[in-house]
Image (tube, rainbow, N blue to C red; front, side, top):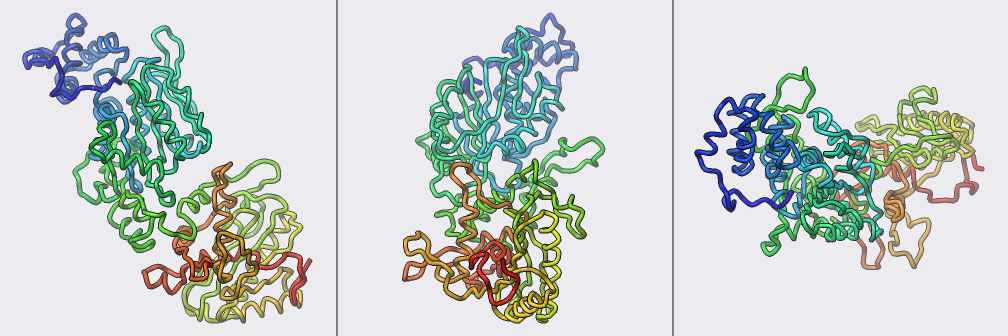
Length: 596
């Protein structure tokens, strides 16, 4: 994978007569070596045309055998044209931006690709790995793939690599995160592998460069820690290349990836190039003429490649849900880096990480749907003895949404959401909450939880009446849950003058408490919650902005201000926050309700 010269700079350019002879039909083993030599020295476009259109299958086999003798790989004809390899060898379709990205890799040391949502970034990274592993002789190159977390390496990039190697019949075999193939002596050598490094491990990227050539593929590059990203530079010596591709970081100002992308825009850094690929570049939006999709299984009707890419409807919906200035839109629609992280109370990536956190398994863990409880269909796991809690956000004066969320241990899920005039009736609201209390109690009993079910209700508006009814029902034995009315406009339950963030009101306290639970632990890279919530709740959790008042208290953007800039009231998010929020000691006796 030596840095190729552009065709215009080749010292030896095959003459038109040589190419004409190479294109003659009936090439045999006798003159295949000469044809292979001519093709290897030809410009990529002419080489591909001659190979594809002027030779039969038998002639191609002879030529590829001679190419293998000359280069160490039967796919050496495509060493400087990854897009040609994807189309000619893999038989797959790509579009303009994808072609620009992969064909930049042989000619630049670093290729940075800030990418929008759904534009096939991981797909194209997987095909680039297949190209690099195939066009180089086994043992002469190693390909290293990495990402923010190992599950991203294992579950996102490597399924593409495994499928590509198997379906195209490329040499060697793949396991979960390794690709091996036999060398000229029949020994299996490692061609590619995936790994991740702890964010603070300065030595993690050392000792990788053990072959003449190296390709580093950094997927989900927006989340790569500065120390790890900086470590890649020590590897890019000699014949080494790197593709860094991912969504721009939404909550990490001056991230390593942002710095790399800026470097690629600097004309004084010719070895680095930045190729942004925004969602607006999708052929489904630009109407770029693209080939038919060749990636879908046999039996699927022929269709344009554009069907698999975001369209204008997706963009319009995203703009409506998040707003033009939201970091999610800036990063995943425009493929740009939000400045200052957007000032959000809860960064988008923290929410996404909590949504993607794996469900624990093993002794004591059960899927809710396997417990045999009526109406319980959730598939995430919960632990025996877990604490079951509910959060209830009652629609103010019947407007907005009436929502109920449930927390079981560390897992948060939606149980109810409704809007309309029915929410004006506090009796019906209280009866719906009672229904969810009984379901929560059945779940707590099935899990042998020693804790009483606890219900936190927003007492504003008609929520005050609903709270009173639930407390009365607790007194007369209709249910056994603890009812906690929360007046979000009151002063916070606790105030630490030495805290970095001091909430001004209880609503601020709720948001900051959940922020702390979602904030990734430096030692594990993950927060303490699993969000098994709906799309709207995920959006709402990352919508309010975080600010401060003149007294230095932290304040969360008000619902009124959010609505003024076109955002919905975060009713679903605040029900989830209420479920998690604990304003009072759990075992303190209250005026009403069952207390332990």
